[in-house]
Image (cartoon, rainbow, N blue to C red):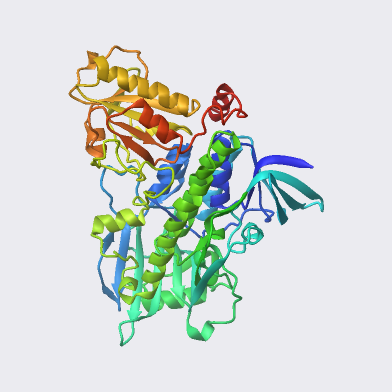
Length: 573
């Protein structure tokens, strides 16, 4: 009988993210997949700015940027005539743009990243059954050599797709429906002269203004390589089974080059020839949402929890964010440092996000006016629409882990507790001659406490109070917290002696003040997943300690946890 802290089932992008993050947080885990080798198909190709931010914190962004290509915008053609042009341009303070990367490349990068922690995907290994016990889960695994293994795990994370064995074992419902239309998808090269980096959407409308023919081409890495999505003619529609595939897609026999060329001949805005067919499939669009993300020691993420129309590339990215949200919470719980509210917050935070994504993509798929552009603005202006598509507006204001308001009861300007922590540049530290980004400080599996010191808090009683806040917060978080004193640009460099703790970074460019609108003497606490946990003004040690107990057990309650030095050694690997 073998044992492990966490068993991750499924080695797609979501399962690989979960396993890699668990290992980065110092947790032992195993990851299994029933397939002997990864699928070589492009499938989900959109990588959103928020996912690139998560990969930045994980240490994966550089490799992803080296392999992906920018997605600059969308060219629209309606009945053969140019329509509205969509530019996917975000404000300059957003560090990453929209990008495309074939799913198989995403999986390869994540697999290589996971291997840095000494963990390999076990293939082909199938989860046969799960038995939930009061203090563990017994999983039965079938290996390729016929061996049956009984594995004891403290927790199981199901990233095993729309037919999830883990979801079924957890007794979770997966309600939803499917659209009647059938689609074709393919990975080909096109010899046209449309601008590189732009997707193309061409539709023909019937007499009532509804779409009766459609072609979407999304650029991928390679020379004139595109992922094509097309309506399947009614005469070709057959009886594919009702199984659901990633991003709400159901797989069936794919079109050949002749069928693809016929669609291009009807809808391409200029003559073009398709070649180098790498992969094709047919599918129907499904939409389903699990009722709970957790049942005891069983969790679901990604397609095991939600599937929906593949509009805006939301599916893979939502799943990756599920895993990114869950991993640090599981790590604290396994180490005996977290309250059960931490695990409960996974459902409380991520289920509303998936509900909004499912509702929005279904609404856009059904509304003919949205079908004209492929992007719906939901009443937002253009920038808000892009931020929503980029998943930069995801927020957890109602989470049990979030401080509801500032300690003085006055709502702060800038991002609120529960919001994403934005990046900013131009930070200077005592031991670096170059300017740093805030994300450089957040590239850690720990909480990060930022203490803003204007003229009144760089010396004397104000400085002593901020230093006491850092010390008490560090103690309340069992050492799993990094603190920084952020000094305002107008504060003289010699106003605080060099070498004191917490270390100092100077907001030399004023971008931190612009992004966060901090008040002199305010504390901002950021979680390991890059969301603001709380804002405290004035910063008082007791307020910070009380808030941190929403997440961390007291020292007495966490008495069985391993020493902080051991944990920190694990976390630094």
